[in-house]
Length: 66
Image 1 (tube, rainbow, N blue to C red):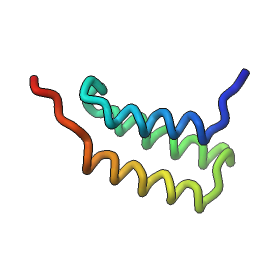
Image 2 (cartoon, helix red, strand yellow):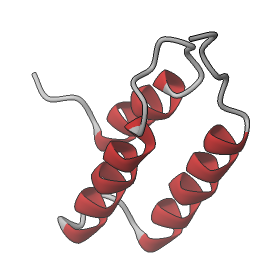
Image 3 (cartoon, one colour):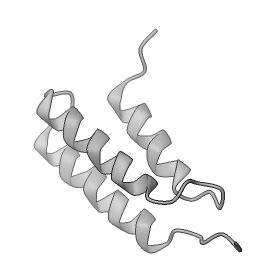
Image 4 (cartoon, rainbow, N blue to C red):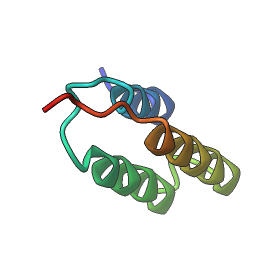
């Protein structure tokens, strides 16, 4: 069973809100967004929507205590 691109991106973006999320995970998320756009799995409007969500998630990302 293959997950929809929207579920995959939602999961990626949700991961950024976790304190134990790996450093620079946002780079992977951006690559996933771009790859899905290039593969025509998401529309241009959806691409912009996910990029905006990524920007918000990065700006509000919790930092680990370490």
